[in-house]
Amino acid sequence: MKVREVFKNEYVQTVVPLVIVLIGTFTFWFGLRVALNTERPLLAVASGSMEPTLLVGDLIVVRGLNPAEIVAAPYPDGDIIVFHRPTNPDELIVHRAISNFTSGGILYFETKGDANLSPDKWPVPQNYVVGKVVGRVQWLGYITLFVRTPTGMLVMVMLFVLILFVEYVPFPWRK
Image (cartoon, rainbow, N blue to C red; front, side):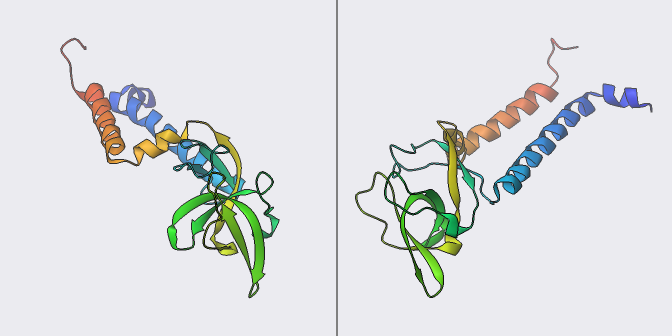
């Protein structure tokens, strides 16, 4: 079978672009992780605790850094950082570093959401810091927030099935 004949196959014409898109997506994601020095380079803002600086639905760009480089100061001068909540390390928080201190050779940060009246109740140890917010794209985070809901997952599965159906089911008006 010649190469031209292989590429005329309908399935190959579908699979090749799909593979190219998947490779491009993974290359982009892992390249972004390396370039920004963090496991979580893009995140969606899920709460209003940082308003008006960051809004719900913003997509934030996070850069990993040495925690000693974080500027800790009250609004608006302190760096906005992403960190694991000390009381629940599976949860990520985006707040401003307002001060820091060292205890037992470990650097800790006191944090506060710009919209919150008081600082967070727990200090954040340096090893819980994911990185510093270096950029944002308004509204784009809503896509991520929607896909994480049961309705969003259902919509994604339905779109996938619809694409497969339209692509592979023989309709009478097609040749």
